[in-house]
Length: 405
Image 1: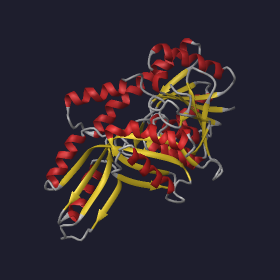
Image 2: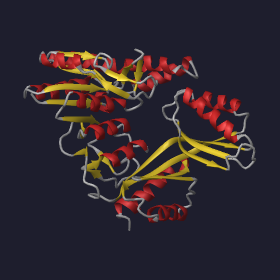
Image 3: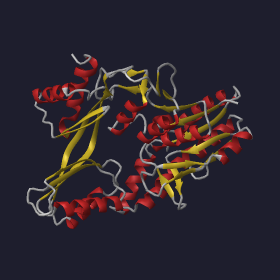
Image 4: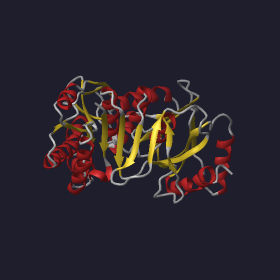
């Protein structure tokens, strides 16, 4: 029998009325003799509300307890959707991430899936049931509840699709796929019918909210095609899958991330303080990126180091900063008014032309570039946060709407 994994998130699960609509869609699919596993996100703004509630209690809530709190949002959705399916005459069962066999490492708030043991899911499907799984959550090998980071329900769905050998993984949200930029920022954003795994992964890493980066990585490793669709409208979709190298070249998307800060260390002893900073951030399970080191001899005053932190999903970042200031003897500065602008596509770094022309383009519009990093599929530039939307529009017009002309 054909098996399909679906994931519903965003506004598609915003209220009970929409859950009833999803139940009708699932009932129609089940009527075609298809096995279905459905992964759901929290309803509406539930996660945001839980985060706000936690901050009323603690400025620096323990990461483990945040996972215990936030995992309840998806449990509400999965139970409600099961009830709606029962009203449709379908036998359905809800399972938490741990009951569904989502095994993770022991990092809290951004855990990685290390194994999926879908035996309970398979048993329930063999009985003819629709299985509804709470996304975004799993259980560590220490048997603690963990969460996979914002958007982690995508990872749950793709990981389950791989473990169940599903025909496909369908991701439903409030948009009909992937666009070349955020349509709310750029009016001429283009719908992308197909996107390769590497390009989609770079888009997600750089701030695009359509798919979670870990989900794309999982799909790439297992070669599972992802179909990104709008929940309640038929028509366009984006298929994320393996494409032949060189099938699409040039800038395909312009993406931004606003919640970033750069940390600077300087002066004699920077080498030791840099290690102290990394050890502390690792203990707090906070990843860093875009590391730059200069003159790292132990005793020279010219020593410096910097790195960038994405602060969007860090609970208690202000507390972390205060601890860093104390540990580093106040020889640390924070750039707090930055945002990251990223050009995504294949072949961007075969030469330096795209980077040089983008720097000139921004300079001609009085937008300073405060840092640059590149990968095989991405050019990222740090710019003032106040000018990030203007930067996106200018670069999208040049590189996508006008095809680089």
